[in-house]
Image 1 (tube, helix red, strand yellow):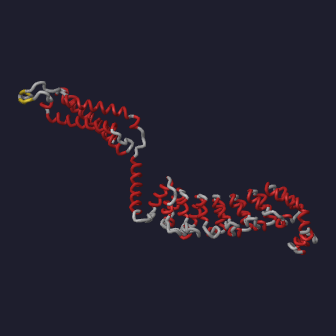
Image 2 (cartoon, helix red, strand yellow):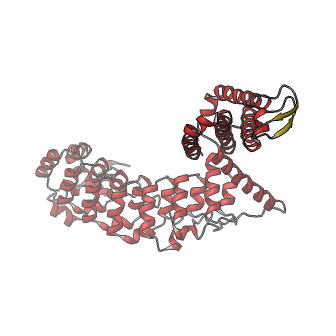
Image 3 (tube, helix red, strand yellow):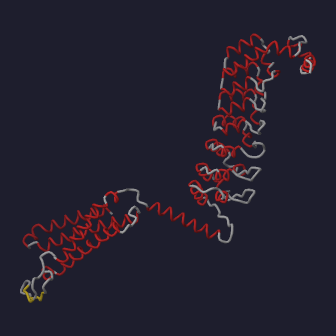
Length: 463
């Protein structure tokens, strides 16, 4: 195409009256652009750097320079650049000189408000809203409005400002397919999601909206993406929890969708959350219900077993010492049985015990047992209990029992307390049996009382 023909086509873009008002007196657009090309380039460079001084100089030089922007081949305006890069003063100057720039679109049909919202420049967002608030509700080429970009990037402050200006913008769908709630979950933005849910907490229909492609709710999406914190929060919202068994277009609940995903630790945690929230187990075949019940029981058993697990290493660190103590007590109590306090009769026959009472005794039997049967029986009971408890401790330590389990740890602790307690009681009884009456009447009763108080108190504290 010849140059003269190109100029004639460009002339058709502007009316003669407009040319006259601009002071160009019939000059073609191509000539205008050639004359001011350097200034336009300087303007765009200044917008990238936020150089307000250069902008003012260019405006003083050519008051109409901001109106020539739409005639340039650039796919965006200087306001798009300054809004994206966060140049507040430059943006305010542009809007003061030409507010219509706030309604200009770039190549992707985005307003400057889209870019400022995505970057989180709250003051620039306020200035752009003041100039052209309708940009809040107009989607770009990808079907997103400024609120969508702010939600995707977690710009909570910007979202609050946009919602305050246009509350209905929260209902604008992304490309007509899904809500802004879906975007928050898809980009794992929990705080923006909380803001939107709290502002619409009574609208159960909106909170449980399904996208047009798969009929997926935000709970479905959070579960399949295995976002534990998001799922936990959503299940704390009554309106969402009520629809925990909502079906997608494939008639699958959130729990069933989770079962179809690869299994990992997050799957296990989220599954328990859903079951606790009342999720219904789907029947895939005749055996599925039994399988699910078995898995549920196994889950509870694992939780219980984990709860029973003792977290300390005290037993492992002191296993040798405990074994030695238990062995010594076992040996000692066994020795007390075959050789009780006061010894045994060396030969049998009739003997005079006390007060002229004759009694038949047998060799190898306890001497004190012949004199005071009740005290001897009590001594032997305490000695036997201490012996049995010490044997139990030894058995637990050498048999391979899971000593880190709380239940086994409890048995071990009780056995240790029992063997020591009854060993002390047997000692006190034996001391009373071999102590002469003259000494017993003076000191033993007080010693016996104090010993029992200390012993019983210690055992109670340990238990």
